[in-house]
Length: 471
View (cartoon, rainbow, N blue to C red):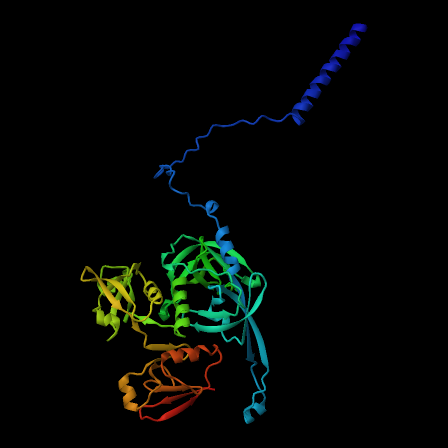
């Protein structure tokens, strides 16, 4: 009886132990991780597995130091406020009969960025930032506010120069770099005031050079393209390299939304510096021209022109008495380089020439009958100007025309699409006498896109003055 009791107790204990072990195995014991030996070698043959030498620096975002460039530039980029006054649309019937204008004036405020380029307060910005301003105000990074005056501007390159009275204080400034030496893939910083967020720094690389945003109009556009974030308010701000040198003026973005989507464009510093120097020395921009017309080559153009080159500028015509004509350039020549700049598209050529003045000498490398030649060309002064928005071109009066009509001022309307203006002489715009094409550019650049001149005075082929009313 006692033995039977012990056997029952043992059996219960044994089964209880098995049950406890089972519970532990199922719910508490972790499964062991098994490692499988897998060959992770690539199934392709590496092209080059030579490790870099100790003297070759590794280029990566981690070992590029942006802090030095940011510190050097952030205090030299200012916030620009443009106050302009415009009149509202519409008027009363009394305005029509009595010639009065009761439209209410409306104050508009625009903002952008500017770059201090000298300790005595000269500031470069975009022309569109200060366009039509009645008051200009700049704010430094230390929140000091100054009134600014417009020294001059150039709508063609979209560059303007401002001056601030520093009252003896020396401003921090950025030095111009050489944009011709900037390389595609080089790191850059964009410094400005997007969306009124002052002292904003973004980083990217140079994505392309000599970019023309509208190749059909053959303007002297030659932008540096970057993927550093640029937004409304960045216009007129600085594009600098990692040394903090100014290599571009941030000007435009390409976007379907109005904000940054990956690409931004800057006026090269060499062009901006030349415009600034001209405005200070001459009061206007001195524009030299090579004196050729032609087309950029590609496979299709090369086939139609029966040439083998797919890069360069094919000269189709040489302007008489121009620098190119006097130097001996001919129709059929292919421009391959200008000085040390390789020319593969028109903006390579026009962008470089935009940094030069009349009477500067450039070495033009051409291909003529499969032979390479280097020809020095003296740039001539630009004698023509196309008036934006009015579809006519003016040129400085030839001396023979001055003698014929016995006049000492005016410009010849060389081409025009409307109003019977062709071959007439433009004498006045809104009562202001016109002496040369520089005067025409200065006068018309003072009008907004929706507000042109009220009247012009022209001299017709019979020597009679005509007043044309536009509004």
